[in-house]
Length: 171
Image (tube, rainbow, N blue to C red; front, side, top):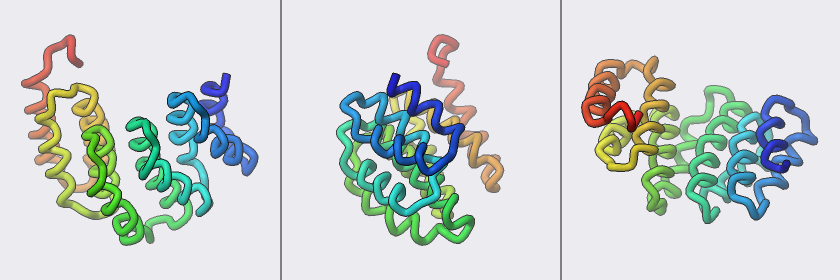
């Protein structure tokens, strides 16, 4: 039930919805926390930004940490529009340096690239060589989002390499 609530509230922005989602980020079930953190992408307040940074820094679940990074970026954009990049980079780079999980790192690389740190595109491409199919799939999904940012040829080449490594069953 709590998991369904966390998923549904993303479509119902209201201060009370954000309050419920914030409470769900402390749930014992990591999947409830994941969905709550993902749904918090609709928030527009600094309290949520601070909560997401804390979750990205310290949650025991790599899924929660990765989604916290992505939602942090979305909330920051909701609050500041396009005038945000330096703040996002200054906040996330120190957290990335301490992160050990490649799945979470992939999310940092994608967000930092979207924030204007173009060198992180190469980190995403390098991470495509991992044996972990879930990481490669996330990278391809992020490539779809950032494709319009002027690196089409580089991204197309990385995706071509991905598809030469994958079998139909993997995809």
